[in-house]
Length: 313
Image (cartoon, rainbow, N blue to C red; front, side, top):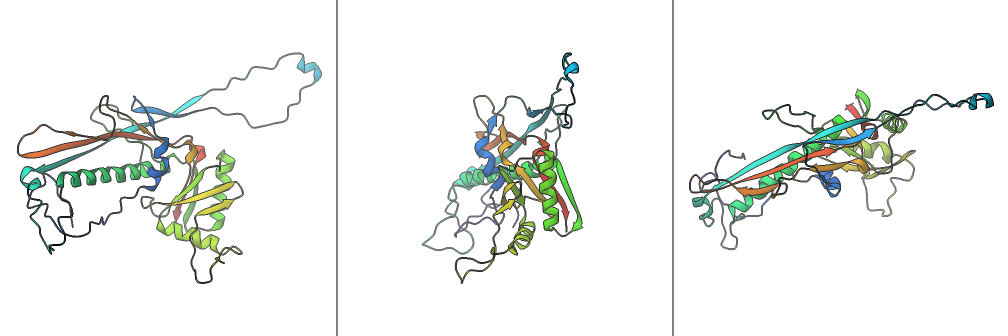
């Protein structure tokens, strides 16, 4: 099964009868988690925070005589971190002949069932939007930052893996509780808060987490005696709880700790149109053609709020 490039016709988009399924899951758990925090911008480059720092804490030693004279002034310098929105753009094109042939069916048919996609234009639009959502999810996790210098260059938003400031390298060893504890401690010492921290992982790392913590006393004793297995959803640490978010777009061998309290999508509207809108394109023949356009980026907050464990065997 493969997709086609170009306009949909009667012959390259056959109609079938049956329940409609997608073999590529369209769930976007990270985007769903943060989308309620979305904000707007009118500049493709936006601030992800302004930071300042203190010197190491110490005990003052100021005598009464010394206190008569004010000490030298200390001024705190601020620095700004930024990210960018980027363009997501798709096109839908379906011929008039295809739209008027919804009753022409291929494959096995039944008088009790009809075409699973009776409106081809709506079907193709919905699939294009699904693709864009999947691309946004992938980008918000894996995106590599690029600031465009001219109109021929693409802005590319920085994703969470690149934004994470604390890094623990497993050096191709299996994930263990020692690695996890080291990541929690290092992130906390760097300034991370654990009030709304989420662990993002793929299927293999999720199983690692369940195996690592399932052996603790009493955990593997469910209320019912006819229930087996472990599904770790929350980890209680010395620094606060961590919710586990299973995400198919997390790369192999990586675990990400993300502070959700400072993460939000940043949308850039087109005046009078909004964001992620469908609009018709100029006609050049007997086909309906639309473009779907959107601009969005990730405000990930300070790097020290997030951590990752890499090179898990």
